[in-house]
Length: 383
Image (cartoon, rainbow, N blue to C red; front, side, top):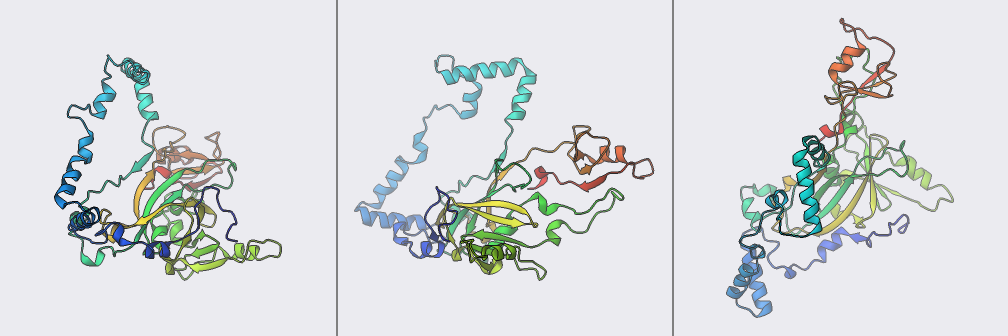
């Protein structure tokens, strides 16, 4: 069971709790301290280890710092891209100069390029200053992270549509940093998926009706599958065990892949997990909406990380989706998905609010034709 389905690039099995307990704080002295004195503690320990005065280490830190890697007259990146030096005979710069000239002469081409090169993701760069702990001094004591702890990088991929081709690409949707002390439910509550906002039912007879609950408020069940164990969300009394049918199937004679365990997600912290870095795991919700979950890194929490536990799970990457335009006006975002509409050659077809009502209802609001209509939430609207 342990070797079943292990990815060829996955790491060895790692016990998160053992990883933390085996850490020797003397490697980086003072990192567990939430104060500005941590740098002084590190310098003192390094001075003792290297037999070098602290003043010398401080001078080395200044002379060899990042600021010394730049020249005084160095050209900034934006200026360099806009003004290519004419006396540089490099192929890349010649291509860059020709591209800039083409954009300047052809405004239509320039607009097309800007649209094509539009940002597809939103990154929150983790460039925290060395005195990040000082920045968070206003954080109440009860919300300060507890040291020592670990930070795990989790990548959540876009939902897998089982009706599409097997070779379809499943792109990255979110990257989050989670603490070892956090529960799996904390990660689940931070994952955003457009299917959680779905409104069930055909609303073509009464398009003004607004349901009180979204799909996530009705279907609250879900699980993570990690290393042969299903972590089910049983916080709601009406939650179902989605993994039961899978576990029953796995126990059948001749399968050779059981038995599998089932544990409550809300009672499990990341410190309780055994994981492989690079191994794809499963997050399932809404009955059949599957996301791949991949853990790519595990490290010890330091004073350079945010010290407010309310910041975690911390989203560091969010993929931006292209907006689904109305098939009629090609201007506004789609708000309705219609089946069997005689006003579109596509099935299903997508309409904005104005076009949908203008084509499918008369001046008195009565339905025209035989079609089904469902509220549509565009993926680009999910933050």
